[in-house]
Image (cartoon, rainbow, N blue to C red; front, top):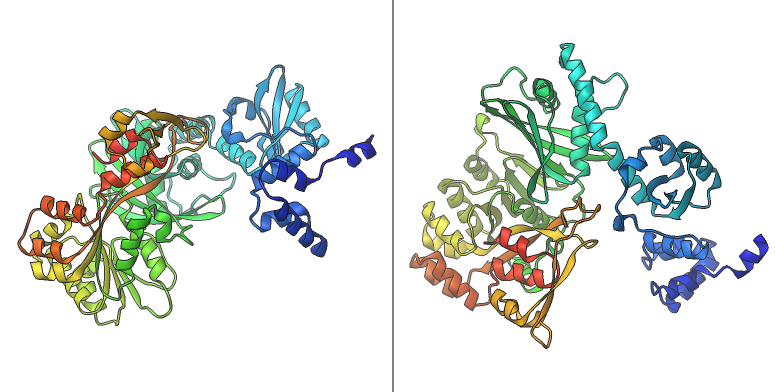
Length: 569
């Protein structure tokens, strides 16, 4: 029987062509390489970028008569997954995911592994039905299980029991170190930080109230409750975080800040830590700064093509000032760091002055503000100008002295990049004038201003199509190039699935407006015209406003109208 199956089994290349994943020509080229190297056809196709690992698994499942499932498209029964020990599940790359009648569906990287099926069947005591799934998705489920609410509650209970024994934390322990001899408080803090990273949080807020300790995560720009440890754990948790970030444990009356590096899933992650004295005790806010920034360039920031062309033309110039504006948390630093990645090469001397240095970039001199030591923005800038810079990055222009030095530096042959807190690109020149910078200096030095906001990206797995009528399209102001012949348009709304945590959104992207300093705009600024007048002229000259850029990205299916209204009023 085995010989008969082998004789009739379809070839992998034929299945991939039938599924529409590759062409006959692609398969023939891969087969030639397979014949020359002896490698497996699937590996050749993967290396050539002709298939993804998921597509290859789908074809292999069809070849061996197995059912393939994309776990991102299904709701996983986490209670069921907990019935198989994690060590066993990881060893066999298999996890129970849901019930189908009286059988348990087991997602496996290799459904033909009969020994693994026997082990899982004996643990569950039920009949099982194996399906093929991507190993990465299986391990993702196991990671979520390890940070599940049940595990959190167990850690809280253990920490509460230890706190009743008057346990204190005085030792210096490496961040997220493992070991059975860890104290319950240390284990809970490790679990808290790992869960925050797993849920893609950018910030963690630990806030004492009168009766409990409130923990919230900011995910995709929106805060949501994560857990509520009892009040008795407050001192231990805060002390542990202060030890990890090298903050004075004894000082509780004033704000303090520190920094730590942890390792989660083999990746090093920096955390910026701030403590704040409140009426109910010290609050702690942690900013999570992931270090996996290799290859992050300006093209990946979400600029529309015509906006990107304007911005690239500005920062490719050897001199001038480029200002990125927006409220706190709008991605300004990300844009500037991506710009530095584009400018970084051995022919340029790039120096930054930041407060604090958020990401470390190889080959760039980065300096952190230290006001206690007399290293302020203006002091540092004066010294930097004597250090033969080509490009200067100033973390933020906060006062007139810094603004004036930065503007004058751009006039003496340096490219200056910085941020400013304004609501629009057109309001930025007026803000510089208010800081005391002379109008002729602003018009002579500023080459471009980028205003931006961050919007949540719709989850591809669950976003729902909505057909807008011609009347609605006209009222919203969607550009004509996006419309059908009938004047309608299909946009999308947020849904909710396991991939996005039932929020309907997964990740963020930037909405931009890029204002280039033209002669006409410069004349308006010299006369101290209002920002509204500057914006009207800039739009006439081709500037796309934040709202117009957002509408275009709604039409492209990137986000929803509701999210656009939340971000851009």
